[in-house]
Each structure stands twice: as C-alpha cells, then as structure tokens.
Image (cartoon, rainbow, N blue to C red):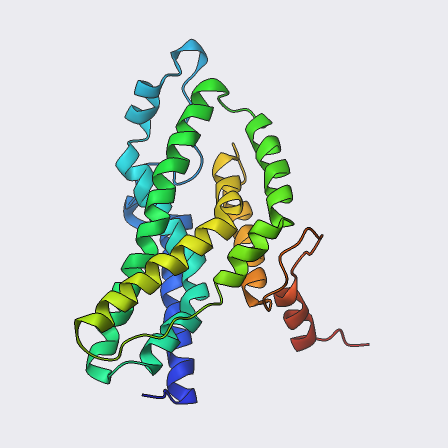
Length: 248
C-alpha cells in the first residue's frame, strides 16, 4: 500500500519527535529516571578503583539502559526510510506490528554491541581511570575506520532494502530479519563513532550531538565504491547551508 506524501511526512515527524523525547531523557534526566551516568563513568579514587567498585557505582543494567536510550536518541532518524518502506509494502492492519518487530530486531544488534562496548569501557576505566589516552587512541582508530573501504561497505549495505512479504508470518519474520541486518550494518558503520563520546571523561553530551550529526550526514550520502579515501560526508551540512543562504 503506497503511502501518501502527507503520511510519509507524518511518519518522519513522529520519529523525529520520539527521538527528541529520548534526547530529553538522555541529557536532562527528568525525575532521576536514570541514577547512573549514561556515558561518563563515575570513577573511584586512587587504588580503590576496581571492577567491583565501578559496578557498584554504575550498575551494568543501568549502563545498558543508558546505552539503549543513546541508541534510540541518535539512531531513530536513520530509520525513517526503512520504516516508510515497511509501511509502503504491508497491509494497513499489519504495518504497526511489522514496524515494531523491525525496530526490535534493529535494537537487538545495538544491544549486543552495547554489552561488548560497555565491558570495554569498564576495563579501560580500571586500567586508566580518568585518562584521555583511550580517547586519543580510539580517535585515531575512528579516523582510520571512517575513511576505510570496510566502513563504506557498511554504509552501502545500510541502503539495501530487501523485498518483504506482505502477508502471514513470513511478513513478520522478514521485518525482524530486516531489522537485524540493517542494525548489523549500522553497527559496522558507526561503532567507533558511538564509542568515542562514551570514553570522554567530560564533554560527552556535546560529543554525542556532533557524532549524531556526522552519522546522519553520512547516512544521507549515496552509496560509493568501497576504497580508501578521505570523505567527510557533509551532505547534511550542505543541505543546511543551501536552506539558509547567507544574506549579503
């Protein structure tokens, strides 16, 4: 069922609205919904720093809750096109559940990645608490990854939208599989960028906003031949400049 332009715009507004709500919870934490810092690890002092103490101050389930909030705040706008495609290719009475199943599959891949990355963060905070050395090392790795053919391959795969069954249980399994594979390629493209603000001893909120801008911008670029090249992928910035020309 082909979605009208008005409905497609409505879908975009709803997704952006949900993303903004997640950002609000993530950054301002109204009502102390989260008791642990979502990115910045609270560090123990001196020789008392240990895995046991870190987990006591920042329980792992709360770290994962913060990670999930961060993923949805930053990644939901990237799901606008896949969600519109699912709605376009499903019956009206099935589309909501198919979208929900797609999002669950997508989130599962980021949850698995979050478990691994949060374990790495705990390890680094034990070995080098409050140090900028891990950030510098990751920054170098992220730059290399950013311009690598593997990163470009992941971005290209993120533009692939499979043919989905329109009816029966196959429609739901297709939506779930689509969510898993789309999430896998998103993790492949963005794991280093997502990890960077989490390692910062301070300024992680601002870093998350910058990373979100970069990830949205590179997602808007057309697929390219995977090869080593310096490509800043600033399409979103170019669009903003064109929409708001400097008055002379």
